[in-house]
Every structure is written in C-alpha cells, then in structure tokens.
Image (cartoon, rainbow, N blue to C red):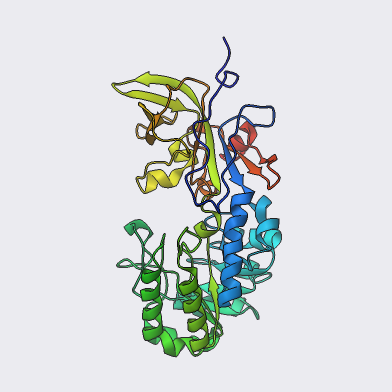
Length: 400
C-alpha cells in the first residue's frame, strides 16, 4: 500500500479570489520539484504586485517605507524587496542586524527595552535608533555615538481590532506618553515614531489618527527631521483609496517639514504566502475530520493567539462535503477550521492555507517536535525554489 506522500492527490486550493490585477498562484501538483509537506510557499509575482504599490506611494507622497522585520524576515526575498523599499525596521538587535546584513538601505533599530550591550552593538551599524521610553533614552544615549535618535510616542489613540495588539490600550508600556518628559529630551532627538495601528484597512480611521497627531503633537514635530507613522496600515489592499492616502501623507510632511516613514509588514506580503499540507487521516466524531501533517500552534500561531479560523485558498465554490481540518499536535484545539469540498477528502490530498506570510513564518516553532515547514519561493518565471529546509539536527540544537 502506498504512503500518503505517494498517493494521487488533488489540490482543491489555489489562490483566494482577488482582482484580476493580482496574479493567482498556479495550481501545484505532485512532482519531483515539490518538497515534502508541510511547506510555506511564497509567491514572488504576488509580492511584486504589493511592492509596486509601495513604490507608487513613495513617488506620489514622498513617504519612505521600511520593512517591518517582526512581520516578515525571509531574507531570500530581500534582493527583490530592497529594490522597492528603503530599508528595514526592527524590534530587536538580531532583527536589526539581519536587516543591515541582508537587506541594506536604511536600518532603523527599535526595541521596547535595550540592554547597554545591545545599544553598543546596534550603534555600530544602525542609521537610526528609536527608544521606547524617555528613561531608556536618558540612560543609554551616551552609548549611541553619532547615530540619529528617535523616540516612540504613545498618542493615546489607535486602531486595533484586538486588545492584545492595541499599542495604546490602558497601561500600555509602548511609547512615551508624558508631553513634559518628551519635551525635556527633544533636543536629543532627530525623529519621532507613532506606531499605533494594527490591521487598519480604513482610510477614514487612518486620517482621524493623523488629525489627532497634527493637533496634539505639532510643537514636537516642529523640532524633528523625520516622523515614522509605524505599520499596520493595509494600504496595498484592493480598493484602498491610494489617491487620498498619498495626498494626506504629502500634506502632513509639508506642514511639519519632516520626512515621513511608513513601516509596512503585512501590507508588503499580503496575499503572498501559503502553507501547503497533506491529509494524513480522515476520522469521524460525529463530523468528518481530516488531520493534516501541519499544526496551528507550530505553523500558524497567530490563528491560535487571536482565535481565528484559517483561510483555505481556493478558486472553487464550496462543495457538499464538510470537513473539520485539524492539525496533528496533541493540542485539543489544534483546528484550522471547517470547510466544504467538492469531493470527499482522502489521505494524500494536498491542501493549502492562505495568509501564511506575515506574522507566520517568523513565529514558527518546534511544538511537539513536528517537522518545521520548508520555505519555498515561486519565482516570477513560475519555477519553484526551495530556499530553506529543517531537520532533526535543527530541532535538537534548538533545545540545548
């Protein structure tokens, strides 16, 4: 009897429905070029679609964009991305170093809290260092040399669909909030960062936040050379009003005579990433359950954190065969979601989940010792390139 990996398979799932301007992912079928599942597939053509939008925003608004490595850091794609983005922004020393070594351009170094050793290390290559608090700035700026410094501001207004991700929720530690304290150190700053948005696809919501910053922080803005508006603005989404967005960014920059930066993460890789899996078993209790060779916690952790169902990438309309798709970890709640298929599933069938780029690959882990998905890039010429694989040695080394 053949193993699940060698049985004939069908791919019910390709790319989610999108405007015709966004190229679809080609159907993958079994062949010698495919690595064993599970694997992440990153589509370079779809990535380029987003990058060109980001380039348009810069040309029309003057706002520079730096990739948020906390969201996406697959550096094998940096050669393409660096042609359209101005650099990277980070949340740790390691991210900052990766951006400097592999991406180039501007390296913005931010951390919620630095050690002295980290500041000394990052000062050797960063183009900007952004502190999270006035106290960190006062204590550690002596170790930054001549690197331009910034400060994160908590503007007391935000857009976030989840309290867990709201940077301005009550008692937030993210950013300085006391205007008197901020004013006392303004002479040491060349810029300010307002990172207060998460999954904001609403231009009116973005405009309200910018109006608030205009109204409450104009005296501070008059003293600096640049302002970062952070990430979380989904301006590469279909139907986002780019004309209004670019106009508003240009007006803000002109009014305050500052260079505006955006820190896109999800906006860069939206629609570009997929997690491919195979069905290993089909059980019933009392509904049909298909168990795949991946897991939510190790391979798509944000679904578990935010209690969201996965998106099964598919061009096809729902069929008449319902299944719960579940992972193979020991976690009882390891469930990707419930989906309908045009035909019954069987072991060996190939499935793909969408939205597996931003905040997904950077969060993968070794829970249950499950195999770490390989990382595959579908290049613009439609060839598949396996850029990274993991094995037992990697698992063992990660533990001790």
